[in-house]
Image (tube, rainbow, N blue to C red; front, top):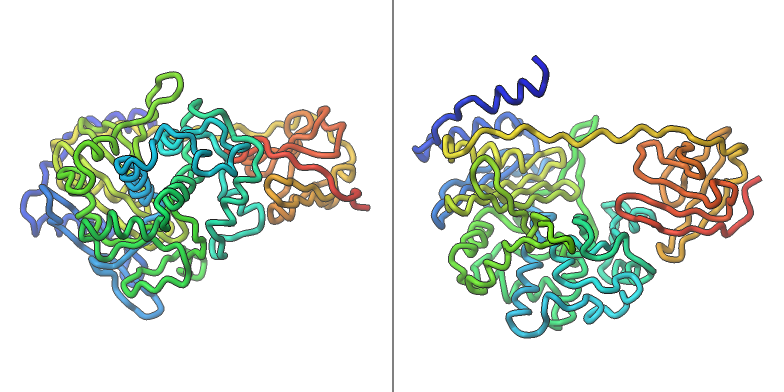
Length: 467
């Protein structure tokens, strides 16, 4: 049977009834998670909130392999991008205080971005329609690894060097860590406190979230922290970060605290119900088309129910908070292993709880395979392109090294082979990045670097070509 037919047939099958008995639910969750976490491995914690209470909280796997410390329901994880909703809430609290407006241009508070973010509003950053370049990829180009230390100031200065965005604001939805990082900087400048301190005083403490913090400085001793891991040929290795940028990530929390945060979306205890309603008000493009994304939260309908969700992925941590507001039910999954699919696990647990209340599964929409790179020109002697190129905006050097008949990208990358593509272009082997030389490749004095996250970064030759 063809794959599409199998998917349709599977979707037509009746779903099991929701599991009602609390012990049976725990057993069902345990059976589900046993397929994803084996004994002696890093794992996940799973929480279910119903009607305002954390009704189920379970832990699977180890928090620290070296010490053999097991995960428990109060283990703290790096939430990665699940953090974005807290940043949005902080911005809306400041608007409620009368200290800013979300329709204000970001340059009102970050004037150093006047060249790179003209016309971009705080609301557009919140809805991922600001169109700004990705600071993370630029730091990678500068040779930073996930395990290195980088600072808030370094990222702000790097973004201030940019002379233009990826695209005009409001034109397209383009998920942006840069946008939420900058929102965090705005909160700090407007409040006069770090985002970490503002959030502690105005969000975490008022909600009783005693085990939640934003890490913006290392080392950050958290006694109950689950270590982050990634799988390797030799087993699991530590996979953690020294990056200090916040706003787009770096909230650390546990199941119990996230249950308190989740309930505020019903009670409006903190901020009030009008602010909470704004948190799930999706943004629009200039065309009027919905982005499906609100204030650090995705809002959509699936399997007959409305969902408010977000996932997170950074170094050895994966997270998912999946809320069905009409059922007053949420599933929280926090994992300390990089290959975990926290969102899929949360969906499996939601099915245990909701059963026949869920409609049939929609057929999965697979990402289209990237188009193969077709060689459309002959660059001739690759030696004429070999040399050192510099981008003032990224403050980074790219070295095109000739190795036989090949060009290899070094400096801003690590040994990436380039292939000819369209006339005047060299393409990385994975098709992700393109180097575009002028005059269909006749001019080797500079190129434009293009990737989905950095669209149009100019580089100029700064040294003679290699002999």
